[in-house]
Amino acid sequence: MTDTDDADRLTYAETGVDIEASEDATAALLEAFGSDLTTEYAGLIDIGDRYLALATDGVGTKLMVAEAIEDFSTIGIDCIAMNVNDLVAAGVEPVAFVDYLAIDEPDDDLTNEIGEGLAVGLEESGMTLLGGETAVMPDVINGFDLAGTCAGLAGKDEIFAGEAQVGDVLVGFASNGVHSNGLTLAREAVTRNHEYTDPFPHDTDRSIGEELLRPTRLYTDLLEPMRDHGVRAAAHITGGGWTNLLRMGDNEYVIEDPFPAQPIFEFVQEEGNVTDDEMHRTFNMGTGFVVAIPEERADDLVADTDGQVIGHVEDGDSVEIRGLSLS
Image 1 (spheres, helix red, strand yellow):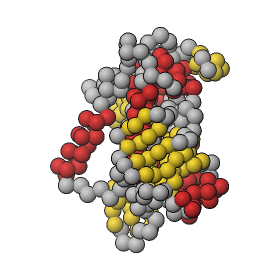
Image 2 (cartoon, helix red, strand yellow):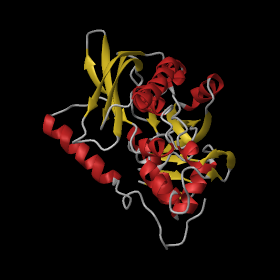
Image 3 (cartoon, one colour):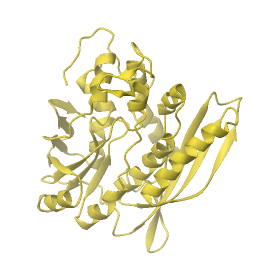
């Protein structure tokens, strides 16, 4: 991918989402409550011989794409995945889930389709749905919003240390598209000259909306091999794109062989005139999960998973990828 001309260039902040401001607000909230988070991805409670972990997240403005093409069958998977993948990044096994649906008016068809997606996500992640809440709030909600909370368990020796070390190898795992982050920018870009129902130029059997709705990949199958092979730290590539690697500690993360970006990213970049830098700060760009592991154990992890070595860890404080330096 190459940088684009200045004319009509889109950024995530200009479409209404400022990642830095959002992170500052979250930090201020936690400071106000005196929270002492023990991982980058989940809060832990000591319950004796193990930890109870909690994570919460939603589907974001991907819901607006589902609403535009009236296909709600996969967003339940996204809701599960965005929570589960955070727990996996901490080294926690997800065990139970509750969902929260806020809606402006009752809609049986919509809730049934959402339920279908939740069921698929629960089965694939091996979790139980403990319950949920559907709140009908026409004075507050225009349309609907979907979020959830995931509970997990981990032995005290199973939580990842969370700190990569210089000399570690980076093993990456492919995404299957945009997942559930950066949709505000993606939506603005693709609808400049197209409708969601238009054929996707790279796969005319699918519409642009269907391509954006590909459900977020679940990474729960990685948990056991990551534990077995001594992963030190993991990063779920969500909001903030590739800068998520900096959550594994203050190092330089040199990415030499990332997974290729799917055609949807090229399409978003071209339609929105988005820079390479902005694309990598917003989207996963083909790689949805990255771990840091001692060099001598990396090949074994790759052999037991669908991962590949994508880089290594050096002294510094940045992410070096595709000629970009992100910090």
